[in-house]
Image 1 (cartoon, rainbow, N blue to C red):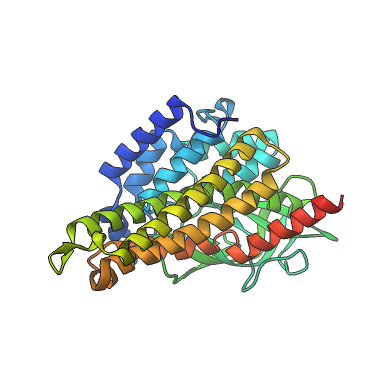
Image 2 (tube, helix red, strand yellow):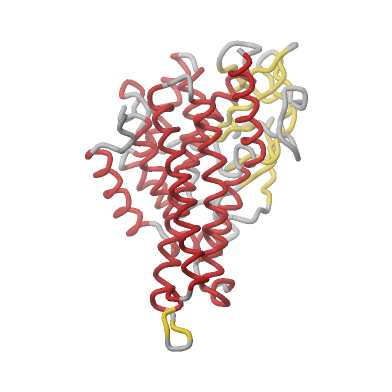
Length: 371
């Protein structure tokens, strides 16, 4: 079995890296970080829309490129490497995936072309406070096409125009699609460790909404969306991890102490080796997840959980050791290490913390073995 990407996919990866090196990178990320009025970079958002990245996995009949999810994995890795300050994951990994998974044909025709064109920013709202969400913890209500309740925190909820919300409907849970630019919706921007990825508290008071998928199947659908997104986020984390390793190696080669490159010291070598090993473990799990995602294999829930856990651990380790390799310089605002550390910590809790995914993996394996 060949887990490597095809030549066309590798070419897409090279083109994406070239574009992002010119249009994204630390300067763009810092501009969003330094300006409290900005929640994302609009120029970069328009650029990725023009290249068709937002519609990479969206079928052609719905305005996308119809390439597939392997191509989306390639793009995710490069966006993570560039620490791109745009609401790509919320819109593409969550909102669009929810529509493609459970939306009606009318909903797909109405919203997916807007996603592909960059005209719509979406988000996915499940959490209602501290702790991992459970079916019994969801208090938001969806009754008679009206949505009420609160969701916090919602990634990119500060700039999104639409949201897919998990809410009670009758005795079960359902997914509801809601326009956030209506009188029944209020939002409060939240402060986080990484302001380049905005977060908000969304409150709904009889806001107009429409169901996505079958009534009472919201929890199963939300879990399926999270599994798909977990693989794509893992690729972002792998890309960020590798960027940290490259930064650390470059600094270790050019920084001298006691008339020697610091990379020649055993302590630094061990740090770099540990970073490399963690990335390879994460990449292997991410590739397995990509295969399961692209083929809709039955192994996807297991592969997604493993990819999510391994990539989160790798990104945190690499971001931390990158700072340590840079020494006292690594803690300063002028050095870019903190951009990756911020993103590593943020992505580690987006869609559930590593501990949540490790528990999911254990439970899923137990259930499979008991069957």
